[in-house]
Length: 146
Image 1 (cartoon, rainbow, N blue to C red):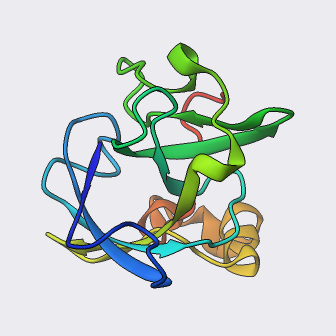
Image 2 (image 1 turned 180 degrees about the vertical axis):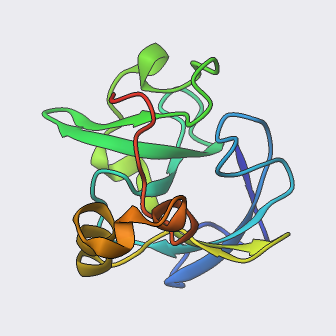
């Protein structure tokens, strides 16, 4: 879950700041982390996104976009035992996906939205052989092959 800092998420401003509440995105994100979100940003598999919960639309949620399906985005928790994600409510319609998380501002700044070129380089090139480098630069490496 996420809590916006002042105003309405995406209420005309292209960027916003939200705080993380709950353990569903651990270890990537933890309770109290502050995130910078770009509303209306293009979503692709691996992106960390903010969306309105399909059954409780006043609730903002942060999850990982895994794949695009016919009825919307399949969004999952990074913390696998937490199944309050698309496994319980299905694909999330595009109009409920508000934006992409760009970076964690606190407690330690971390980039969460690398460009495609950097992502490709870190997944297939020589820099990708450095243990943990891809993850530190925000490239999602699926630990379980889901």
